[in-house]
Image (cartoon, rainbow, N blue to C red; front, side, top):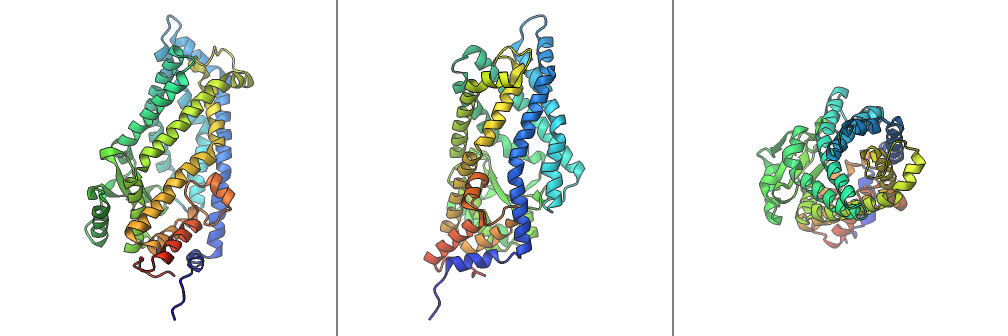
Length: 399
């Protein structure tokens, strides 16, 4: 008589495919990343405080408005100067956190020069967006001092949603090359999957993600007509078979079909609204604590570092909320994959390859606070639970 399938044993078998030393390395990398969140916030606060105490932004604002009030130009000038100072002051931290550490753990092969050039390109792209958004919000502060945070939240949500629409078309091609999957079994399989769930097959692309990272990954980006699913070429350099491709691409198609980009935009928009409301309420206290001189109030663009400090602290405190919002969407995409493409083992085999940058078995509290994806151990277990109730689902056996 055939032995009943045991989801717990199957999950343990998948996790055992990596030796204990690699699990320990992944745990060290992941838990070190938790500390990066705290230290990143501390660095952001320190940099903003240094800029604020230097008085340089007050001098910039006074210089622009020496002859007559020019609030729009003053805001733009202050934001540009602040961004350049932040770029310089925070560069050592950025190098350590986003290049050196990744290099030390073998998660990137990118040279320092390549990383710096992309970092500067990202800063150059974000600067006009941040300046425009700041001009709009400061205009609202001047015209509606009591309700600016409400309208500011709406404006911020609209701006970031528009950015999400244009990101795959105008921004991402500046960093990577995106091409259709080459002819062959993988492309045929992906096209068939796309037709099955109503995803346009020309929206399934491969990009040279190995240029920046050795991580086994795929993603979905865009909205409306620009939405697309992209698979890193790392997936194909690590001997992914068709079952793994089906599992991973099915997950990304889940994001696409389930419209996660829309409700995530709504969720983060509401959080932005709450954040701006708290900025409005906490600004007087923060201004006193920072000891800023020459700043006249919230409507003064020279007070921008005070706002940045508040947002950095709020962002740190909101980490469990933002991660949980994303984690829910990721779990939903996993379920979409196994339900529609019946690859619990393919998905699980692919997930094992992600353990190197996301420890597989954190505590429940650690997962809630720090993980923006469900822990790999839990994701595999859910896939195996699905397999237990759908014994003929998978096209490949468990390990």
